[in-house]
Amino acid sequence: MGYYIKRTNLSDNGSFTFIGKRYLCGFKAEPYESERSAKNALDLQFKQDNELCPDFLIKYEIVDEDVAKKISFFDILKERHNDVWMRLADCKNIKEDLPILVNIRWEWLKLKGKDIEGSTKEDALIQIFDLLDANSQYYLTDVSEEEYDELKR
Image 1 (tube, helix red, strand yellow):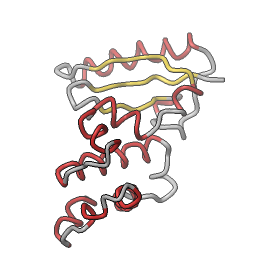
Image 2: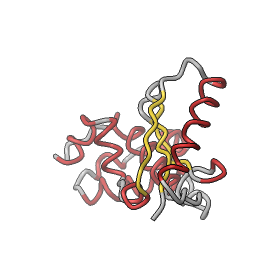
Image 3: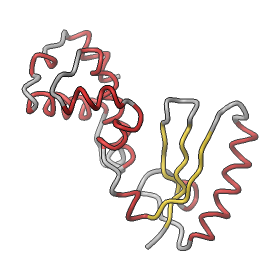
Image 4: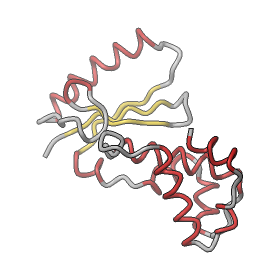
């Protein structure tokens, strides 16, 4: 079992990533062998972040590899946009939720290393459309070509 550094940018709507050895992000990064080595790396990351982006509010945590890998798209959505998550759970999403859903799904795919395997933001968009369709919210998937292009950017 290993450990990752969970780096949450509180200045940017709570976006986060997991950092492993050699400061690679996501689960393609090799985890630290011990909590102590992760803590030492966290100290270095903290100093580097303070030098490069002193105005950002960043939260750091040491996270067990097994716990980190169990984080779901829905966990991220609920943590950052509880209102959108509640509408999704109630099958009552509105069109304004689409960019949030797509961006968080894309972030989750990158977190899982799917971008390295060839997934794109358009894949995230299609997955969200499939989810909304399964929730009988197919009317939200009726977007213009311009809206589609904007969502996949």
